[in-house]
Length: 309
Ligand code: ADP
Ligand code: MG
Image (cartoon, rainbow, N blue to C red):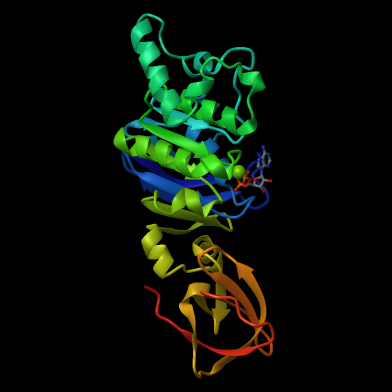
């Protein structure tokens, strides 16, 4: 189990100004998938780097099982065998091939096993056709996948992924995500994924940790946070929403009815595939709701709030 106990960190070594992260507590079980979400600059990357031991903490402890993760002051070589980290900026060896990069840290004593392992990993990150390609000729997204495979090569017990699919185009993202996350579950590898992409979270994460104002605002399952998002930032993960009398109401919770107290003027239709997102105006508010068909601009409709399912 990973245990983060009362972690506080500031980049400013003089310890002045407000810390990037304060009093952070959470734990991650073996094989568990935890997402870290938060706005840009909320400290997601910093937290992953701290978990990896890249910096010394101002306060607190980090443990994986019985091993304390220590920063550079107490540990000359950053990194542990049981833990791998794939940074937002990945460093690969450009002049050797994809398979050589992936197998870089695998022993040459067992060439057959090494070959099989690399082939398996190429499949997980969907790069089999590029095994013999030099890394310098790959796209950003392909490089990101090589970095992922290399981190998985020695079967870590826990892997830290920073925006792991940010460079990968939408055509491949869905299937790659399923492949990588299912692989981690299958092998019981714990993962902590920093992301601002809800698709990385929903359907995969066991828990979401929401970072905001340097603290952990929420730490619950996606299902629980969907039902009770607690703050607009979290709600935005689940789709378009409105604040009505300070209540978070998702766009899909509003339905057109014959008559109600909520009368709006249709302003714009956004095609979304199987539905339209409708922007409508009240006297002093903008309201978003979903409807199967587009509506006539400037027409008036009444809306009712459905219970969250
Ligand atoms: P996120 O990954 O959520 O976008 P970061 O962890 O990268 O956020 O950054 C959190 C805060 O720490 C930001 O205010 C950022 O400017 C600051 N920061 C990040 N890296 C450094 C650094 N190496 N030195 C000083 N400040 C940093
Ligand atoms: Mg970041």
